[in-house]
Image (cartoon, rainbow over all chains, first blue to last red; front, side, top):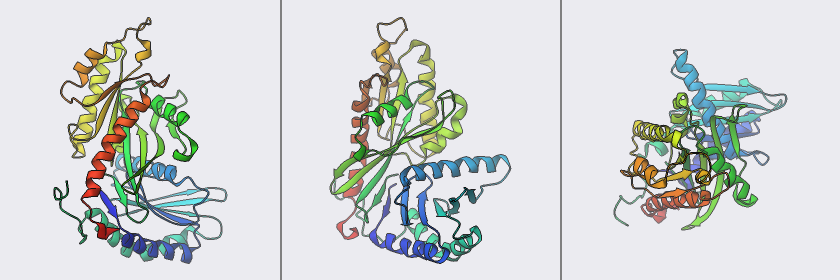
Length: 146
Length: 208
C-alpha cells in the first residue's frame, strides 16, 4: 500500500494546522505517520531537524504504547514534554497519525489542547480518507500502465 | 509504505537494516553518514546504550535525487539485534519499504544469522508482508576478517544458509572499512525505487 497525498489534501490539512497555530500561538505543528514519515508541517520549523523529529516521535509513541500495554491500557493518546523554554505536545489522531505541537511560554498547554480538540474531527476525516484510500481519486488500476 | 507527496513532488521510503546483534548494521549507517556530502544527508540519530549497543534504532535520511520529477528521500533505520528486543524491531519495521539483511560472516554467529532471518520473516509476516516479495538485499559483513585468526565462513556457505530459498542480490562487505557498503545501499535503493516508481506509474497525471 502506498500513501498518496495530493495538493488538495495538503491544502485542506494546512487549513486546519493554520487554525491551530494562529489561534493557540503555537510555534509550529507537524503531522507524522506512525512509521515516522512526515506528512505535513505548518509554522516556524526552520531551525528544527524535522525528519529526525518525525522518526523519534514515532518511536516515542510506539514505546509509550508498549508501556501502556504493560499497564493494561490500550494506548496513551497524548504525551507532553516540558523544557525550560520549549515544550512539545504529542497527540494521536486516529490509528495512523500523530500531531506534534511545538510551543513556548507565549501560550499554554490548556489552550493548545482546546484548539486541537476544536479541529480534530475535521482533520481526522481528511486523514482517514487518505489512509483508508477510499477517496475518489483518478488513480489507474494496477496493471493498466506497466 | 512509501509516501507519495504530490504537493512537494517528493517520495519518502523507509529502508531497514536488519540482522543479529553485533553484525554491523550501525557501522553500515555510520560509514554511509561519513561518506555522503552534507547536501544529501540529514543528521544521524542513534538511540544506543553506553556500551554502544543499539537500544532502539539508528536513523539517517538521504536524498537520492530525482526520478520522474520526484525527489526520492530514503530513510535508513537499523534495528537492535539482540534477541530480547523483538518488540522494538517490530516497531521499527512499521511502514518498511525495503530491507538490508546484514549477516555476520564469523563462524560463531552462523546460528544467530539464521535465527535473525527467520525472525525477520516472522515480523514481516505479522505486518502482512512476505519476505519473498519485499525488496531485500543480503550483505555478508566482516569479510575483512577472512584470512585472520577469526574463523570466517566462506560466502558459499552463507549463501546456502541464508539465500538458497530467497535468491536475492547479495554482497560481500566490510562495513568498518566501507567495502560493499555503498554497493548494498545502491542495490536496495534501486529495488525500492523500482517498486515505488511502478506505483507512481499507476497514478494518473490529474493528481498533480
